[in-house]
Length: 484
Ligand code: GLN
Picture (tube, rainbow, N blue to C red):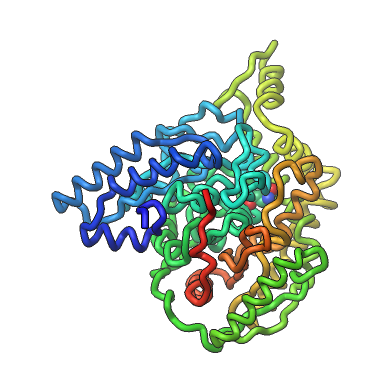
């Protein structure tokens, strides 16, 4: 098998045995990018030269015994994580020429371990969207059908992993942006517990919801990346001071007796019959593995989308106030200072970002704060309590990741509300702050991937990874590759 097709665990083993080098792997991935990237367009910036020199350094250190860790694995990073000296655009015209003077904590930790940066991946502008169609630059194609979207907002990262244009990637998830594109591209995506991974250097969209996580070819690789990126960081006051386990330790343990909650609110009318059938089959597979399905209820689920779009837009309107043409990136000419601000923001932001800034400014305004923002915070507490209640009787909760498989480009762009519904099954998880993973669980009749979501208690990623791995090993879905 070509090197670019393999995952982190397998390549690390080969590197350890000196059967390959970081350079060989990196060249294999860069060649793959040359072959397919014009059809997929997963990247905003390719860092070919940096990748080759990083790989050379690692091989040299390995040869001279200067290195304790043996990574050297090519990784792609969503372009909303700051990379020192490398453009970080958030796929927004307003940050088109922004080159950060500092490195995010997540990428710092990866590079310290010898990971090699292949480039920065496309996203919906400022991570606002579910398809990458809101990118200020271009839309990424789904490797399974290039007429379709890869999901979003981490669509570039998910497509790059699915098309083998990297060995693994990082994404960020505010309402589903890791899990939804992972599901639509047939790869694994983990949103960690809020606070598990430092947000330092992640360009803020909605700070109380944003979380960085891995997008990988298999479950074990997600655990390997979690071991590197998780953990307290003094640079992020919301990062949690809880012990970081070895996330790979639970992998391979059986799941006999594990109680898996099936929430009736997630098996609704409107869910695609093929998606429903695949998820039902996955429940039976879990039973065959010794897990016990238990009916649970998350009674406030109906309010999740509305609650999210009040809170996320409120936080976004505040976070995005910093783009004024003075401190960062793009600056338009103006008659005076105020006009310069207005021209810069009018031309720098795309329509979805503007819509959200307006919505969020409205919900935070003194006349409407109690009716919208405060009310949404109260409902958020109810949604969190729903999960707490359910987790009194079950270990995990199982749902579809998305109501449908990947949709066609342009299908939902004229109707923002339809686009918002793409995250109906992922959004509550961010509001509650709990971790969740999406793994492949089947294909539609036209060969589009379907994703299964497992949701866990706060800081119980290990159990998620254990259960996800058990299912993965019992099925072959993760072995299929798009025909490119
Ligand atoms: N699709 C959701 C939104 O548009 C979630 C995005 C995300 O998780 N970053 O806000």
